[in-house]
Image 1: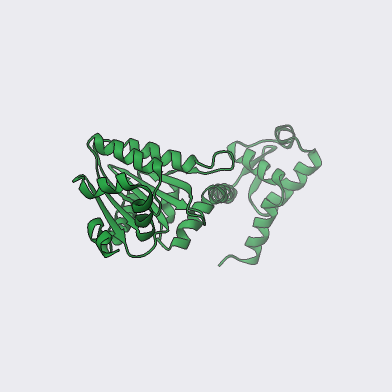
Image 2: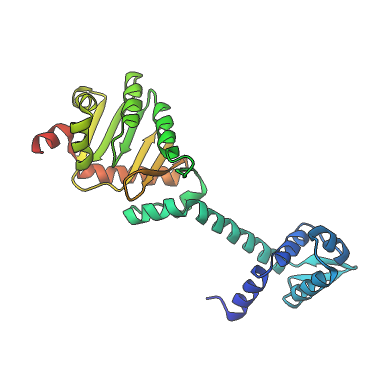
Length: 265
């Protein structure tokens, strides 16, 4: 557990961007106070006061007129930069991670370090949908495993194109998607029933997220409260690939083949 002095020192460093800037500059190479003043555009009085605070905490020492970061100061600097990086990632990936956590799917936190996120924005609300369509169209000649809580014309058309080009697809949907497919996308449903390369399963419970998996790529989709695709995360990281494979098998285990699901409905 961190001590009170540790919290105080963390607040001290984070409490001023000038303190952070000085420690960052000194981490690269030792400097005299005058050189620090020029480098960070601060007054000499401010620089001297901050250097005194650093010396009190033994983050720097003065040698031959220049200030040098100590090994402790290096660790403090590196830990602070790592924290900033994590906070930036939290801002970028926070909504995606929260959507998956609400779905209770246990997405590996380490996987966020090894992937690309495409998110819908006010300026481009279809960014996630468009990216998924691109990824589907790239699956020509592969075996695709997918989970989807929605059905759209764009997804159906892209899937039909890759099936025509030699891909095979295992798709898990839920009963809401099945009903919409039967009512609004009859030709696509008929093809799913007759095409040997397209195998569709229906899960008994509503699906709250999407998966798209082929070759060495895993894509995870999160959705907003209206079931619109909000973001798509794509990764080739082994931990994410293993997680995606496990999730697909878990969903598939309780699902029913499409013909039986339609008959039961």
